[in-house]
Length: 272
Image (tube, rainbow, N blue to C red):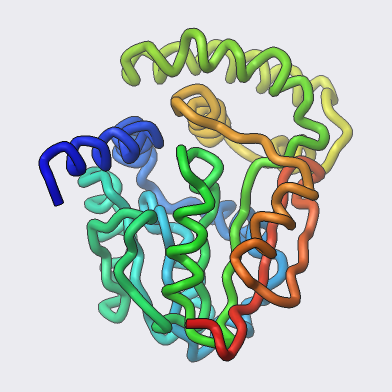
């Protein structure tokens, strides 16, 4: 690979804001009990018993919380990958009690595994990538034949207000500001959200869930929305097509919190 190719690859990775998310997971690395409820919703097609004895690949693991819960359900072990050193350090701390989980620095675009894992998943990651289908193809390659591939992504349904107002503001302003400043600024919309939630704002399932969270957790969620350079909000049909274009079978989708999509499919037995 030439130096030009390397530079291009670095630019593609940087477009997904791994350094900005690394800042987030360095600052919000604690494991909260309510994270399990979020994980179960994000992986709604899989029950705790479905992980027992299986191997997994967590693509874009962040601080490791989405690898932690499968291990508590009896998973045999697996691989958690990310490209930011701060995220990986947080994941190693979170998963220290599970030596059968490897934490490695790898790109979702080039995972480097073939026919290896029973369950391959990515929670809240590929909608921040410049080339989401390339990452999804790499995930499918890593799954065993008859293995399952799962993604959780932002939906467009019920997020029109974000797409029309908040997302243009993120693109034009927050994604260009130093991440530490964005973290500070997140306090103010978080305070407004905190107040509105206590006044009964929001009738969909997501807002009911948010009412259960403390201020620090809410701030991390608001900050997470403000910091990335790329954020796709896909309608159901787009998510379904993305899965089917990778040759996955028995593709199923669930509307999570009435604002996002969890999609799962099975890799065919004869898929290379």
